[in-house]
Every structure is written in C-alpha cells, then in structure tokens.
Image (cartoon, rainbow, N blue to C red):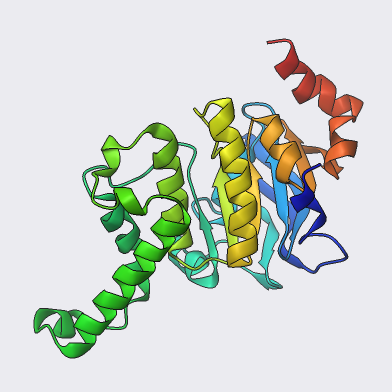
Length: 269
C-alpha cells in the first residue's frame, strides 16, 4: 500500500458522502439496486466493477444527471438526491467524465477560467461598463487559474488550444477545471483511461497530492487496478448494479467473489 494510504481517510473520520439504498430504474431495468456506501472526509475511495456494473450511473445520480428512483444521497449530512446539477456543484461536489469534455477550441487557460467565472462577483452591468470591480475580479480569477495550472504542471501550456494537448494532459486539464470550482468532494470517472503505465503512476501521485493540497475527499472509478490499489483506502465493488464487496483494498482484492467477477476476468484477458 502507498504511504499516502496511511494518511487522511483513516482513524474514524466522519463521512462526507453517504449513499443509502440508492436505486435507479430505467423502465423495467434496474441499473443500480439498493447500493449503500460512504466516502470519509479527506479520504480516497474507489468504485470498481466490470463494464456495465452501474458505476457511472452512480456518479450520474450523485451529481444530479439522473434522478434517484429510491434511496438517498447525503452530502455532509444533507440530502442532495434529485437536486439540480449546478446546485450540487455549488454545494461542493464536482466531477470529471469518462469521455473528456473540454472546450476543445479554447485555450488551456480559458478552459479553467470558464469554471473560475462561476465564482465571479460582478454582473453584466459591471462587465459591460468595465467597472473597477470587473477588472479586479478578472485579475484575481486569472491568477487563480494560473495557480491551478501551475500545481497541475500545465502553466507552460496555458495558451495552447486544449485539443492540441496530448491525451494524458487533456485528462489532467479536465481535473484542473473541476478543481477550479473549489470542491470538497471530487469524483473522477476513469481518469487513467487511455494512459500508459508511466502516465498512470504519475496520475496516482497527482491524485494523492491533490487530496493533500486541497484537503479534498475523492471517489474514483477506475479499471487500472494498480491505481485503485495504490491510492484508495476503501473500495466498493459493484456487479450488475448490486454491491458485491466493500472494504479495505487488501480484503476486496482477495475476496473470491471479486476475483471471479472482476479481477479474475481482467487477468484472463
């Protein structure tokens, strides 16, 4: 286990996110069936399972993309089930997507500024007439965006069109944009997808550093088991929309049901 695993997320920390009997039905299909688990304050948790297990559906329920059929989602003790996505983001829950969703024709800097502007303290009137508050806020937001890009190793590429970045750096930029919303809980949907082993190791270290520097809680969906086992203190396993296992990485990795349904299937490919 990585040394980072012995830090935040252990020692009886309070839950920041609680799923209670979460269920989602699409007509006669039950995609998520009475799933319950928690993410601890300051912890890094993993959500794994075979393709089609319901992992991204869970993310879509947490972030308000889908409406909950039954059950509840508590963030910091308050229900966020079926709230509008922007309200959930304002509350402190942000995410990345399995398929990268950058503004591909905008620069790296402008991609981050689009998120920073959600906290701008000026309105259309101040912007139109270029009042002093507009100039001050724009300067502060640009400094914030550049600081984030510096932390994420992207500052030297601030003026590059995002679509021209290598794939791994596009993933990193998407995380940067999510961080610009000042989240307390960051949801990462397959952040290592398409990355080579070296990039995956760098990402693993980056996620641990993000958690430490920004005092975040993180929930990760990932198929790269080295990444999941290397950074997560707790893992929840789904299969066909139902909970298959839940616990510390070592226990989950050695659970016969998990080996058969997920780990074993991966090893035979």
